[in-house]
Amino acid sequence: MAAVLACGEGAVLSHHSAAALWKLLRPITGPIHVSAPTVNGRKNRRGIHLHRCPSLLTPAEPSSSPSYLPAGGRGGRLTTYRDGIPVTTIQRTIDDLNGTVAPYLLRRARRQAELKGIHLAGTDGRRARSDIEEDLFALVDLHRLPLPETNVKLGRHEVDFLWREQRLVVETDSFLYHRGSVSFEGDHARDLDLRELGYTVLRFTGKQIEDEPDRVVAVIAATLRPSGSR
Image 1 (tube, rainbow, N blue to C red):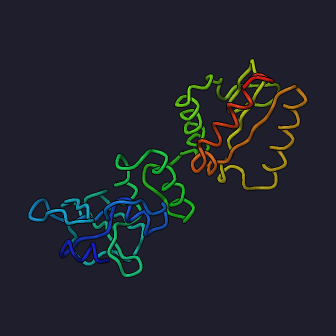
Image 2 (cartoon, one colour; image 1 turned 60 degrees about the vertical axis):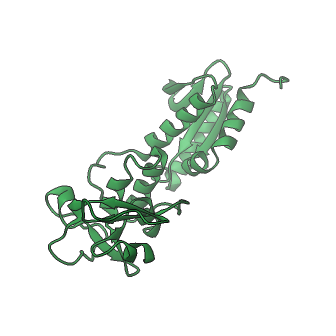
Image 3 (cartoon, rainbow, N blue to C red; image 1 turned 60 degrees about the horizontal axis):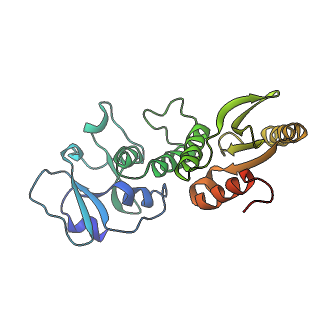
């Protein structure tokens, strides 16, 4: 609130600071991000990153809805209040995160918004599981592990990642696609089938891939390593 008040009339919390207030992301160290409906006349203050955003000019008081997005897109009323603090709406916050935080953080924020029941513009048909697969593949590539085959048929199942020579299968689990008892039982039956075919099966959640990437990579690397080698 202090940062918003310091930036004058019409200023609102924005970007990853707004995402933290909405509980879409954990707080990120560094300056507080504030957006103000102006193009000039205000300078950054110590501890504040000021964004000059004339598109935030509003004809009236901010909307009381966290997801309010009027017809016409970004150019209308895109601010609201949370805990008494002027802040960008969830939709505008997601828009502002695009290109200003790491892609995995943007995906995390989108998932959290969707779990809150907010329908985000431009997210129809998004598959959270695909996002997790992209994150894992990026980790494998970054750490220069042998590149796997992806989304390939193995027996009667399609697997996410396959190291055929090492007979290793890695599956990624998303809450959105693995939260029912049928999916739970199906995953275990699938793992048994693959193990009967002689494959090692590792399974990682999206949270593990995002929060413990080094640990995930270490487990995969150790499993790929030939027996008896160091």
